[in-house]
Image 1 (cartoon, helix red, strand yellow):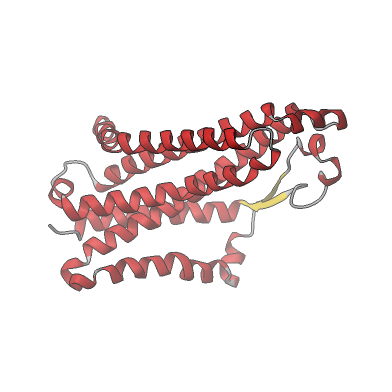
Image 2: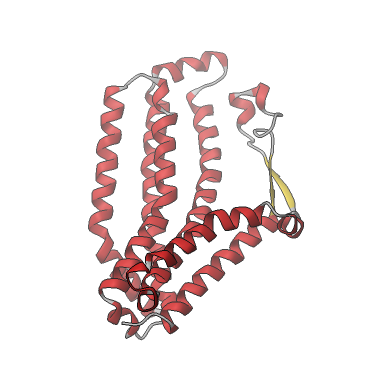
Length: 265
């Protein structure tokens, strides 16, 4: 385990400068938006949603760039490393998810700042939608969004890692057309998985363990919508979550195996 922490420290040293610059830019941009639109309730949703989307794709972009760059430019360091490839990939993934969580934390700080500093929101307390109730609702939604973002981002990061490994690993076979291997993985991850998810077999195997997520704080903000879908209860299936988990682990395992056995200097 000590070897894995050494790899994680190495990833932190390599990525910390760009991560701190990115967070600083987001904070400066957020403060600028707050200043220009102070007192305007309409600035809550759009920038916050864009930042969540950016955070969602960040681990995939990080893994694609980092894995591809190291395998292409310094493959001997990877291939002669005493640690297995899964440790190398997992250390990168933890760093990527850590930065993503920091981005979501910055987003949350600005959202709460807007909620408690906007006169329009505070004035709504007279009709039962106080800043406190709205903050409670945002917190509950934020927890679910954060969990979903972490899960989906790791799944996409697994595919982007495989894209990078396939691209670099096929250069001795495909030559300058090795980008076709990465394109093939991308098509499988998008079009292929889309076809699989819409198939009768997939639905049959995964539509079990259904449960609903209900927003308990919704009746304090929008009482009329508390019993209406999707607010009244978003239905999920344990089978689908289990299938995505298996797929994610399998894709990372395949990437690790390819690095250990197929990638050449």
